[in-house]
Image (cartoon, rainbow, N blue to C red; front, side, top):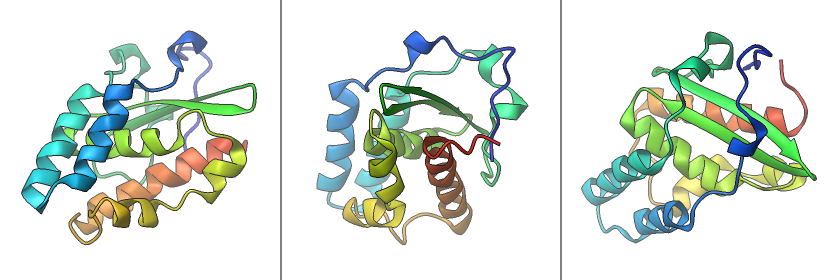
Length: 153
């Protein structure tokens, strides 16, 4: 899994609840009628996710198992888990945003119970993603769960 470097970690103030616009954008994916519309919504969602500064795009923050480069940081405060994430691929960035909407500000128990396959089924995305995207998505969901459970290495 990922491990955070102590040299360049994000300031804890960056770990916040997600904006309502981002949450609403995920709901629009579910309402889209076809794969093209869903894909377009995912791409737009990726544009809304804040970009990580270049100095935080470190190898030790990369999520292994993703075909594209993806970075994930975690912060826990008052029993809630917060994440910062980014990717060099727009579609992956949109998929990350979906995972963050589902897990940001949640408790360890809520994150542990999160089922990425059920989430993507409900959005109508199952079977639409390539096997490499599906594997990368599973790796990201697994990293989010490991962080929430205190497994940082």
